[in-house]
Amino acid sequence: MPSNLPEPSYTGALVVSVSIEIDAPIERVWDALLDFPKYKEWNSFVRSQVITDKNKKPLEDQTPAEGKYLLMQVHIPPTMDDSISTTSAFEQITHIQPEQHRIAWKNLLPPWFVRAERWQALSTNEAGRTVYETREVFGGIGAYLIKWFIGAKLVKSFQAMAEGLKAYAET
Image (cartoon, rainbow, N blue to C red; front, side, top):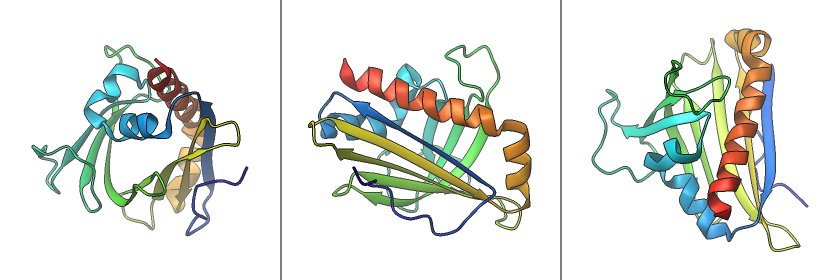
């Protein structure tokens, strides 16, 4: 089955990619993926994801849209234990494509240091099941540090998110 992810717009030192089959309607999975306030219920990697303004002030409207900002608290490696400290990530939504069931965001660090863009996409396979795919490409000098120090943990984190989304959408 062909991927629903677009081709990466650049190459990087690290590419983290995961896919999983989900036995739930594509719209249910899409709704779960876009319901950022509920991530803490099922996502052991991204423990909170809040839409903010550029000054990191949470917005009343938490509907994802292109150009909005995301303040995320992540566990690397993944865990549902919120007594363990999280790491912050500040991103900007670059694409929302409901017709293709795709969303993407990029980090806001200087691109010479770390350039990172994450895509998430859904499609339906020949068996009628939803396929969730995600890929993040890390470029720049800092991408090598990410690769060496937490690359394997990021793979586990992306996999845990996929498994959490599957379990949540299938219930």
